[in-house]
Amino acid sequence: MPLALLALAIGAFGVGTTEFVIMGLLPNVAADLGISIPTAGNLVSAYALGVVIGAPLLAVVGVRMARKHLLITLMAVFVAGNLLSALAPGFEWALAGRFVSGLPHGAYFGAGSVLAAHLARKGREGRAVATMLLGLTLANIVGVPTATLLGQTLGWRATFLVVTAIGVLAVASLALLIPYEPAGPQQSLRREVRALGDRRVILGLATAVFGFAGVFATYAYLASITTGVMGLSESSVMWVLALCGVGMTIGVMAAGPLTDRAARPTAYASLGGLAVVLVGFYFTAHITWIALIMVVLLGAVGFLMTAPLQMMVIRAAADAPTLSAASNHSAFNLANAGGVWLAGGVIAAGWGWMSAALVGAVLAVAGLTIALMAGHLDRSPAAPTPEPAGKAIPTALTPQLEEAGPVPCPTPM
Image 1 (cartoon, rainbow, N blue to C red):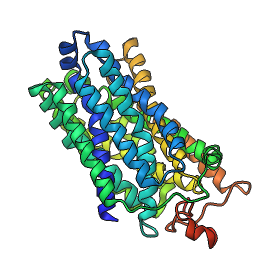
Image 2: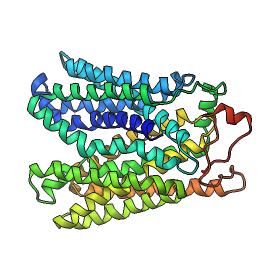
Image 3: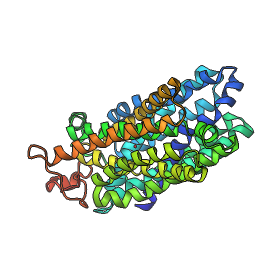
Image 4: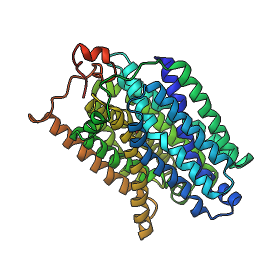
């Protein structure tokens, strides 16, 4: 299992790097292609649009594929999109490359999370999913700063060529290290769509939208907060973002064992803690050393919710989890866009940069409210009874076990 998780994490590292690195290269892209920086900003939106459309679409297309073949195919699309971005002769081609790069994002994390949980020993599914997601958070600490520096030194196209090479490495790793298991006869589009309509899945996706919107409402404006409120120089922005990335990594690492022990309480703690940290950040941002601690805590409590929300969706859709797990990453990207838009509107209304933290806190409380409601419905007599934690996920994932009867399962993007 560790080698298979390494292969999945390499792909996650590449995906995380290409998703966030563009934000630091917009001036370089704009200067090279002869467009304005706001126009270049559409490259960020094109990627997010690709994620939202591609996550359910490619999950549906690949529903009858063996997961190993699906993951390799998705990473091949990722390679093609980044290569197109690197070689784009004009802005329209670069836009198309970013859209294609985003298409496999959600389906890759969805299918990868399901496979990681399936490969794990009983009671360690959360750790396995968190290990894969660790590649995404490490991208924020290592991949994005390094790729940004490379792009500023050698040109933005060099960055996407390097990301393309990471994608090729991921394809090779998936081909060599992921065990092959044929798709089970019970895997079907009808089952996947029916599972996506489960109220526990819907509430899980809604929790992800509001909860992660709280994270990104503040994270998106962290550079401006660093210089305009904390009083640090522009050269410090990269280090502040790296500190947030350290917090994200800590959060994901803690999320694995906590999810295996108690997924839903971990989600509650993350959402409640996020609201508290954001309110604290609002009142202490002008005290530099406290503000830096708050930045680390923002990343930690924000990404603490990744594994539990993902596992809760997978377990709720246990008979056919791929589409639901992929849709969870569409929810994360809707959260990204929605959180940034809401916070931007409040800032534009004259409330100042730190109003983004208060917007984030309100969104986190909304996410916590939805999560608590979902927990209450699960405990109600009419709801399906959640299974005890620490058991294997029943399997549409392993047809051989399904023939022997369902296996009990516990009840994060």
